[in-house]
Length: 263
Image (cartoon, rainbow, N blue to C red; front, side, top):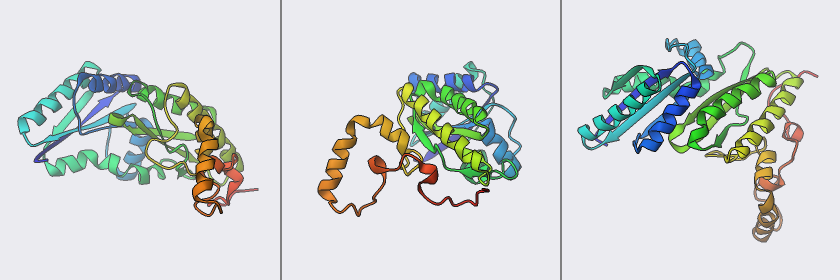
């Protein structure tokens, strides 16, 4: 596109950001990007990149693009008005390439920054992604935090709001055996909740091992069919064996962990 404008809005309440997301989607607005970052994510990029982002519960990054500047202006102003309606503050918008890069820097470098959130904690790709209804984005983020607190770990919530994709990472001390049990419980609880609100176990990434038990719950009525199809095309079970419908239920002990764990 010839024109691209990016913006950022800050929200003191995660729920207000969630209501704003729903309002934008239902309004017919057409952002080319709509991203959520929670306070864990904000703190991580501030610690790592010294970005000076405000200590709020949520930040929304948004973008519109097109071949006609007036059309892009219209979309950005429409979205901005919705943010303000839901108490969004500190709204910035820019067409300038350097300013766009500055505004988006925190989201771009978030994954790496999460490992600097707390000394001794590692960022693990557990419960990595899920898809939920647009109306449940903020509620899901809040649930992720509640599950983390309950299970003695830290979890961040960030997502691609325009497609209902929520991402999370589990931050924990991987050298402690009990932390892996905490993580196991948290992953199961998160995906049980996701299914209860009409979501799905994976939005854009693979199932791997840690999501497999929850995925098998979701697809229980299709597993026999999938096994039959795989057997027809792979009778010797040499193509990616022991995954998806045949994945172990205990993913923590299924393979050797990449982290040294205290006995």
